[in-house]
Length: 201
Image (cartoon, rainbow, N blue to C red; front, top):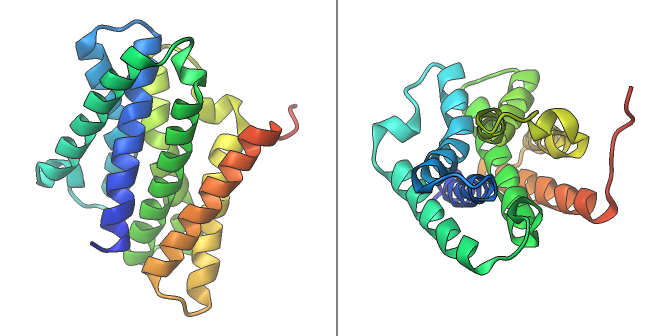
């Protein structure tokens, strides 16, 4: 399993859990939970693949959808055990941070393999990381987190920059992807711990 496959599986499970728990928090029925979980898991990757002109990975095989469904099932089990407002629960916040990191890395990898410019690599890393969650927020009729919580998209954006800089030092892309994911995860967790925010207008 290469870096892309590893990060993709981690991201799919993590974001399927997050999306499903957000849906449960909004008191959607089981179908709604499944739809939101799958959309959160697959949305960013679908946008990523479409932008580089290839058929989305989720439509080429059963693997991505199957992994997302596993995440939905896991979330349903967790929702029975977690009390209180689910979207603010540490388990949800941690899963979200893991998904953000993993998908930022896959976006950067795809951008690099497609021969995009440094800006393209950074944009694809960011969009892959926040795309699915933004679509889920829109379905829940609320302003996407990426537009109201500045240190959500920012770690993904900087992670894309880190990926590109590391590759320019001659490091192989798989290692650069792991560095990117580690950077995004640690930055996001620090932002949650210390409540970092960018200035508001």
